Amino acid sequence: MTADITLRGPDDIVTVLPYHLGYHPRDSVVAVSIRGRLLGLVARADLPPPGHEDAVASGLVGPLVRDGASSVIVVGFEDEPDAARSTVLRIAEHLERAGVEVLDVTVVRDGRRFSPRCSKACCPPEGVVLPEPADVPGVAEFVARGRSPLGSRDAVDGLVEPDPVVSRGVAAAIVQRHRMPGRRLRRRSVAAWAEVLRRPRTDDAGSRPRWGVPASESLLADLALGLRDIAWRDALIAWLAPGVLPVEDLDAPVVRLLESSLPTWGGMGFESVEPTGRDEVLQRLLALCRCMPDEAPGEAAAVCTVVAHVAWAGGDGTVARAAVERALRLVPDYRLAKLLERLIDNGIRFPLPERDADSPGGAQRLGRAG
Image (tube, rainbow, N blue to C red; front, side, top):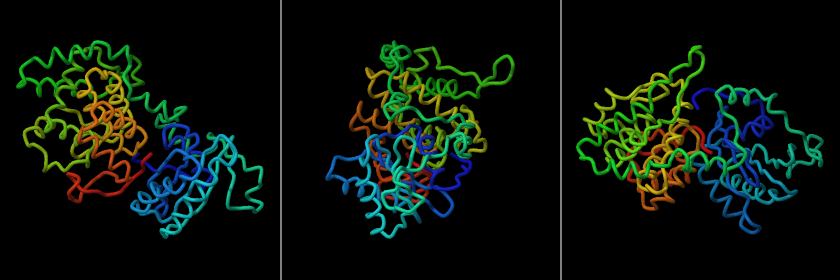
């Protein structure tokens, strides 16, 4: 997300969290890092069984501290009374021991917020009704960008799972295209990605962009098979998510090929100058995940890993995790997916300008994560 979101206080933050995460959390705890006047890392975990609160707290506090949080808001989402109370209080204790100010600890249930720490008139036992989403400026700004929360975390997983209708036949096309001479693979893959990423056309009225998943199974096969070429895959990620990998470390011929073949709208390009349309680009890439059948695990894992990088670089941590989890379910030892999983687990954000032993570009903790 590249533009500011207007939030007036803790109630606004609680109301906007489902839009921020991309789905309505249930039986979850969410910790929101505040850095000055900016939202930083947004970390979520399932509510643990009784007795396991410390493990969840430890897992959340480390990334929040590394994110440079000056303060944190801790929010528990529960279906049953007191299901989240012990977890949010334990997380607050861990944060305070780490020297991080806890601005607020809130439990949300049935459209109301309850405070496990405050007994003043501002926090009555019956709770406080949260503002309607339509009354929160930040929600309107999310909606204006075409973002609305899905019903559950499982619905987010559905964004990257294969659609049996559109993925039918792609596995056979991958097998058939794989038999073609390897020297032609990169050229075919470039053409396929250029088609998928073309600037959106408008309808006859010239008012709305129009694009659909390519119907050609051979095009989808070329697109996926090309990612076996590691130099091409890495450069493509750098093109789709500027800042993820330093251009100087990429294969020079592939860099020139990308610059001459792929579009630069929607934040794409090694030096992005047109951020408008980032969400459209991500939606196209998610459609590609749904086109990739599990019967072609290597190709599906590669596509999901590319998409996960784009989502993580853009601040959509929930989608990034869903995509990388599918990749690792299909190919457990896919190294790039395992590396990205570590970054997500630790809340380490792109861009990565400093070099280190674990990542091609080092690590800088910026932006938001789900």
